[in-house]
Image (cartoon, rainbow, N blue to C red; front, top):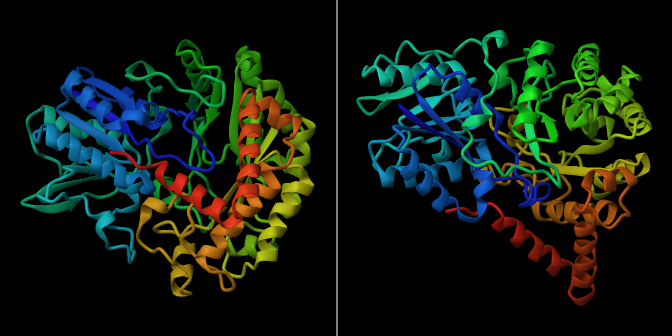
Amino acid sequence: MNILLLSMPDFLPLMFRKNMKIPHLGMTSVASNMSEGHNVYVGDLCTQRDDIAGAVREAVERYKPHMVGLSSMTFQYHTARKIAQLVKGMNKDIKLTLGGYHATLAAPELESEDNNSLFDFSGEDGQLFDFIVRGEGEATFRELVDALDGGGNDFDAIPGLSYKTNGEWCHNARRPLLDVKDIKLPDRSKRIWKNYNAFHYKFDAIESSRGCTFTCNFCSIHHMYGTSFRTYDISRIMADLEDIKRAGGNMVGFIDDNITLNPKRFMELCNAIIKEGHNDMYYWAQVSSMGIASTPELSKVMRDAGFLLAFLGIENASRRNLERLNKGDILEYSKKAIKYLHDAEIMIMGGMIIGNPEDTYEDIKENYEFFREQGVDAYLDQVLTPYPKTGIRKELLDAGLVTNPYDFSKYNGFWTNVRTKHLSQEELSFIRWRLHRDYFLIAEPTPLYRKAMGPGYYYRKYRILRMKLDVWWKTERKVYEQDMEKFRKVNEYL
């Protein structure tokens, strides 16, 4: 069979500009774990944002797929539906499969009040998606394709699969988590577009583990992996880095859910990178405050391995809010982690979550002041988002604080979908915009920020000058409204 796998182009407006083109690692993993004999093509639509429809049409015409697989986060699902409709309009005989987080979160065994159109996988004719792959896709998708290739329709024996029979959806039992030893290396040669980049680097992605044992109530990852933590052998990771080099990458993002869950193992990984000579590339990873703070020597080993940037889950400067988010009292850990990473000259992108139920303007401002005082290099300041199937969603709905319960296209952390007990949705959105500008954008970038951003630093200075001129010529509220309209259009495709 000819198989075309497509990832969605939607991205986080505030953080990822159009020059950020990040490959979808999961699809290359699905591609490499197919049975022999199939022709698999992987297309990351983030590389084709200027003409999504043209790129999809060209790929379908060139590769003549029998099956098109789409991977989608929940906020990307509205785009996935449009692409599915485009493909079906070209050839109604092409089978369409949806996988990824949205497909998994919509699983019938997960109790929820989210019975709305965004969880309807049918089109106007009742048949948009033919199959839904829930959870890890490597084995489920392989078995589905093999069943179709054999001419059969014995789908009920495939765990993790949803399919239609007699017009009704059938949902098979969930597939147990895979043994990572059985997962083959990603096959990056299957990519049909290759112009990936982050800032001024040629970017690629890798994973050294899957899952997280933490129980943060704003996160939905346990629906994909449970509360497991499964690690790949160090030798496999080194082989994957060799493949990234062959593909031309010079910056690598570890997309592990919690790579510092086992600091000793992470240190072993960093030492292996040094020993094998792979510290001639740059790296970034998402790390926890507790993991970094618990092992002071880890940050220096990360630096020697080539780590340029760490996304640090600080989340909040308020112990009350940290407790509500089920993060625990990590404030002192965050302070230590910031110090250790900076001592090792690693840039920190701090994760911040505002818009908690009790937040006032002063509470929110306290977070930005904390980040400034601690010297955090970049801010990923997100508004608390009631993602489907999370504990915080139920709490916020019960409290009447969710202002947008079902338009999931705005559920990416940037848009404001809640209010607090003291601030309206609009006030919360405006406060975040203003404080982000005053504490991060207009502040003089740190030396570590300049090093990591390279030429992007000068683009930032240009943006700041334009912003200052705009505020001078117009009212602050007018500039805010123009920015929101610009951000709204970022993910309008097809």
